[in-house]
Length: 103
Image 1 (tube, rainbow, N blue to C red):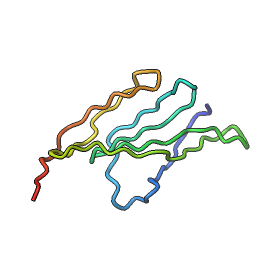
Image 2 (cartoon, helix red, strand yellow):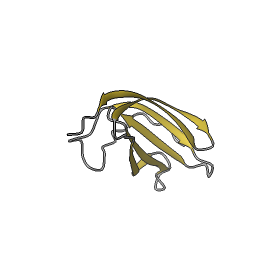
Image 3 (spheres, rainbow, N blue to C red):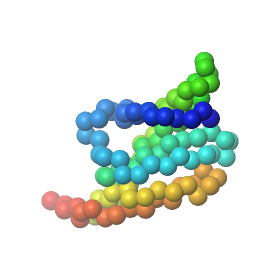
């Protein structure tokens, strides 16, 4: 993979309503492809597939492929830390933010 200087990635739904990113990690999957996972302050995990631009092999391209929301009926959480465990596995640490009040 070529080096990456900087890249601004915007969520597929736009910036409005998106929570601030609190943690990021790049995972190498068993098939040698790579994904970038961004965790946010509201318990969201946004996943981008990373590819090398075939036209010039010097630029990385990112395609958002999934969004997961960590939620509980009783509590909301924030992603605090993430770490690659190898072989495409990811450890995610969360912090309880608030107790959800059912009304």
